[in-house]
Image (tube, rainbow, N blue to C red; front, side, top):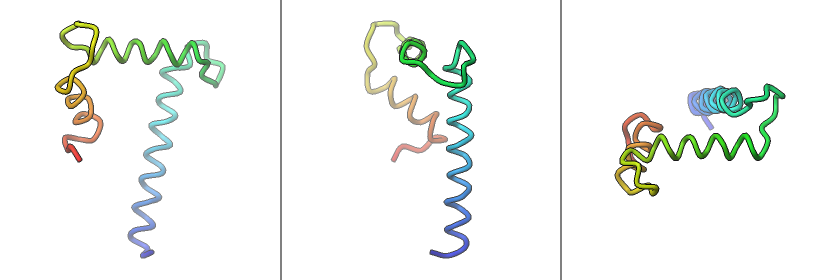
Length: 77
């Protein structure tokens, strides 16, 4: 593996680590440094509600595609 490829992998790992830390902060409502199942499920329910743009109780392909596109910077793989 070239140095350039290794540097890109290191940068991706750092970005993933930073995203994971951000998620912990968002989910860890009791500030214990850990995420309980209840905290995780509450977070996911809020995310579902946010993604369910038309508030019909289900996520369709359009709502999920919009989410995926935002998460990946506008590219759909």
